[in-house]
Image (tube, rainbow, N blue to C red; front, side):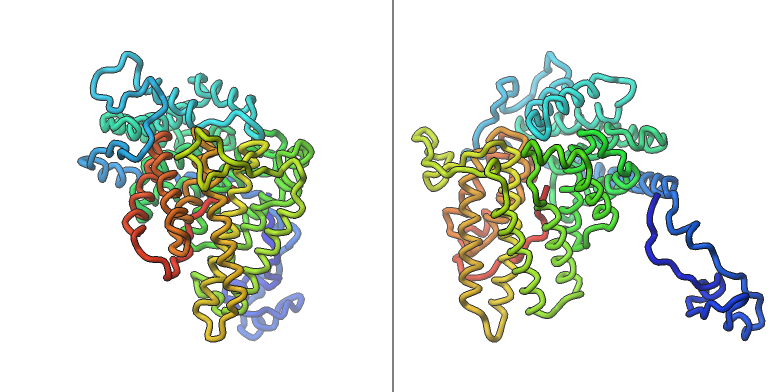
Length: 506
């Protein structure tokens, strides 16, 4: 059921003509003056809530049909594309011994099985809130040939794409794209089935199809297939309704795709969809969320809810809906206050320690320091908190830089936050090494490396971490972003970098 909010009480004729109706009974004055029979008024109680399942299903199908067309266009660009470059000398070598630097000879194990092995080794979680149960479910679903063909195909496509990147294997890349197209075909069939459309395996497959686009990232202006997957996932969340939060896996899947939806909103300068706001409210009041808070898996506050305000502010700025510098600065500072409140109210179990890095960590640690977190999930939350504060304070700095009467004290405070938290992101990065959580650092590290007001050492370290992610995890996006920033690392500080609308907030 979908709530449609306030509805017009006018008669049908006035509503069609989009004019105000005086709602007189038995007929309105406008119809009487026009000499037509007034059709009367509808019963708002009958339509205030509507069962929109069919409409949402059609919307999902249309999104996926559009995505198939987009994929055909994208595949045309793949043919004859240059070979994926091998990791640079400064990059770290792949860690999987079963993968040579270059695959150029027949393999004894089918490449799709190697792809699945790579996927489960590199891209899956097995700790709270993604427990062993989640990992076991994903593994079992992969081997269930009958019920989850779309998920199986998506897993193999992502894994083979990762192998092709770390091993310089263009023929494996070709196989991964074929498997990707097969996953899209299975997805279309799943969305035509009312039961499969709301299945956990279907939503997980959509998440992985989006991951495939990240692994094979080429350029921001060629990211339409990824955006199509996110739109499909948004519709699926609405279709799944509150029932998805009656089981832990539903919450686990939700927080994964919610992050991608927010990222898409920032890239496209769009406010947070109302459907996501409503679904988030259902999640916040769900038994799953309460259980996670008791287990210290979820904090009392929500960084995500705060990030909704930032995404909406950014959209309003980019779309020209708000232009008053004072109003923009006030909202940015209010968001920053909420972020500081989140830190102050975080439970002790969410704390972390800063220690001297071990001697054998030279070259892999930053500034001789290291962070110790209770879990990588909590480390991820702190990274998101730092990233959001950096973005908010970038807005404050830019406002003051263009003000005729700048508040230099406020500007200095904002710059201090940006520098300190950029350093913290670099210090915490090695904590994520060889973990799937390191994928969440790609865009925060890009933000740090892009900020020209950061010290050169901070920016350079962030770039090298991006190269490390590309070399060990097979995420092409990380390598291409590192290359893009490296071209400008020699630029002297002093100019403000644009606030990038490309960041992830789980």
